[in-house]
Length: 266
Ligand code: G3P
Ligand code: CA
Image (tube, rainbow, N blue to C red):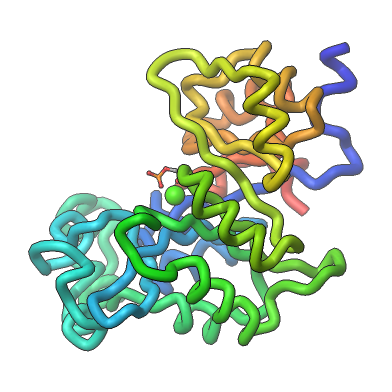
């Protein structure tokens, strides 16, 4: 029944701070991640890009224009060059009512910096972005995860890895089968998935991430019935969060962690 498919009370509903607390602070900055933890996010969502000299950094876009004062592709610059950029002032200009002087001059963090800052005090929900464009992104990510002791084969795992690229997730799974993986899937309209695809995803992943606008009740049921987690993105209204929980979502990505009703917070 639908009832048995909805969120089990004993199971934790995951609140994933999308790009940190990006509704309130410049996305993918340490300030944004700090705020997300203070607001009660269970996971910090981190998108990965890679510099010319092979460093993993936290940034959504492949190019610098939207979230920094730089121009061009991330992969054309060394880390040292990227660290000269201002990754916060754009937010103040775009959202004057949320502007804060602390955001001026914030830098683009490396993944190492994020792990160094938060260690094992938080959970990380990391996306390999454009993994075909970057050499060894998965290996570099896993090396850092290992160095900071964020994953073991107990329930203390601090990391989930997500990607639209099945190849990237399979590469992670092959190296480190203990890390829970989420297959992101994209639909132009309503989400429809075959049982064959579900069976394939279950071989390496624990769940599916999908734009909440494509999620239908029957899709949610099918995913949950198969024993997969369902994490819709990016849900920025309380009513929509509650509707998704009703049909079986087991977590959501949001820019506004504070809108999640308190009974779903730990
Ligand atoms: O990772 C879930 C969601 O963030 C995927 O979309 O474009 O915001 O990375 P995007
Ligand atoms: Ca993402």
